[in-house]
Length: 181
Figure 1 (spheres, rainbow, N blue to C red):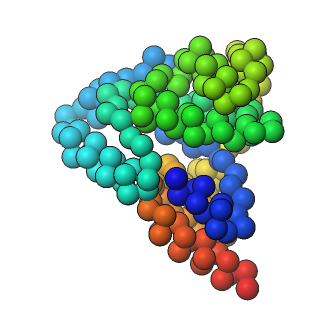
Figure 2 (figure 1 turned 135 degrees about the vertical axis):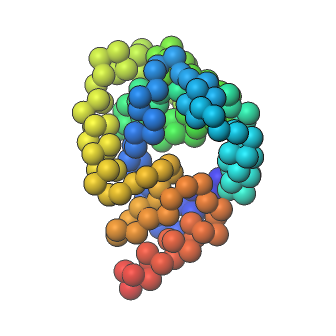
């Protein structure tokens, strides 16, 4: 995965900032045909699959989109815990590879458990919406920063948007390092 390779090769710190991608999607999800009515989804799916393969990421044959708000709140909580960063890769895989509804609390609790986090604590965080404000702040920051898609790699008012091959991200990081010198 590109991010892991970057972390191994450069002194970078990743901080996840969440973005409201299709926040109007109901928790039970939408068929992609309903999200993008009248569009031929085949080229879009092929493009996404190609980008993911180029970035070294697995990608499944998704038929639905799901509301990611609770998954973002779970991720924000996990980031406060030792080893919690593992949740992000598992959420990616659940959504983009396994087509799991990441808007469903029970599914999110299972994912938290797979990450080695407490299922009971995860359920409490989600049911009580303990990280709702923090995700609201992320959404606000994303909008103020001009983020238009995910992922967006952002630093020093510079951004790289979308799933990118390692070489593109490496050029971005090297440029940021050069700016500091």
